[in-house]
Amino acid sequence: MVGTSALLAAAPTLAAQASPGSPGPGDSLVLTVNAARRLALTQNPTLLASRQDTAIARGGLQQARLLRFNPDFSAVAPGPGFGGSRNASEFTLMQELEVAGQRGLRIDAARFGLTRATAAVANASRLTLTDASIAFYRALSAQRRLQVTREVLELTERLLGAVRTQLREGEISILEANLAEIEFGRAQARVLSAQRDATSASLDLARLIGVGPSVALRLEDPAAAMPVLPDSARPAAPAAPAGPVVALPPLDIDSLTALALARRPDLAATVTGVRETETLVALSRREALPNLRFGVLAERNPGENRTRIGPAVGLSLPFFNRSQGLVTQRRAEARQALFLRDAARLQVRTDIATTVRALMAANAEVAVFEASVRQPARANSALLEAAFRAGKIALPTLLLLRNQLLDAELGYWQAWFARQEALTLLDAASGALTPPTDDGASSANSAR
Image (tube, rainbow, N blue to C red; front, side, top):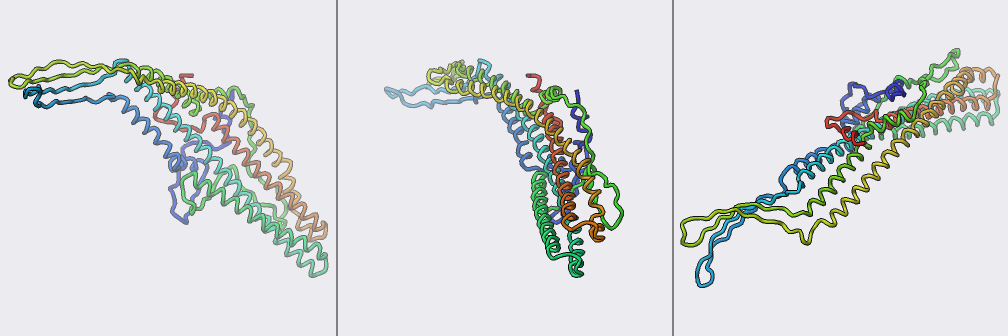
């Protein structure tokens, strides 16, 4: 069996890392993926709202422990009866009690509700960490693509200057010069498009980590170092890879699935939900039974100096309301909970199978780009401009080869993001991205 922690050794983990404080407007926030995750856990408003579900469930448990009925006090004041005589004064203090175990079932259901709410909050944290991690890698990839387009724009602008000089000297035709002008315009448009994508991705990441849109984000990841495109003014040198190709060990889908089934909080929530609804079904049946009322009756007749005190007993008679509709409702909710549990189990199995296949494909794509596309394109591009100035290659050939380099760089960063996304999704699918809780959210796993 391949553990998820071993599988993701090449990817950033949720290890403790100092998180920078939230900067003010106009400041720059330096982020690693760990810092982004930490900020998402502490500042994401949606997650903070979800965490209130446990406080709500605790209130429900506190209420379930209380007696359902308060004491009832009644008094009958003396008044003239028939023939002018006065009636007796009566004082009654009664307490209605559930004697069929309803209170215990209500407490059990509330406990299951608290466990389910805790698991649901843990799952919300898992999803928030997943979204923040993917948003981080998406923004980082977009920034790298923007950097590539800017560097290509600089190379194209320098080439355009050389072409204009050759045109004035009559070394090239107007047609070839127009090709350079068109390519320069396309390079400018690519920068604007990449800038738009990078801005959108950065704003989405800022939203997920709970900072304002005015905060500039500077993302750092040692595994995504950005090499500079080859400069034709100096001899070509092998370019360092922007990120290592992860050597994936054999992935056992069955083992990963078993691991996910044991620790996924969304599944734990549905399992506990089944027990909660089953308890509520039993409670709804018990609530159709009569309750006893015990108390004290004090009576004093007019003209007497003593008060008579004795016990009072009552019984509720469920003739009309026997919780018929409530029982039907609870039974349907119990069946619904079973379907949701089965759906969660199927989702876990599907998530593992999907993410494992996506990770293998993305990692292979990165390897192809790094070894067969990106490095050869960089090697060909290193001396392109010098060869053009020396008249060894035509301008259309130079532009074609440079566009191949651009496509290789942009394709690599798209594949890099796909790999990082697949790594994150596999970590999330196996439950590794779930932060620990203090409420024992995983206690419901024993019910499976």
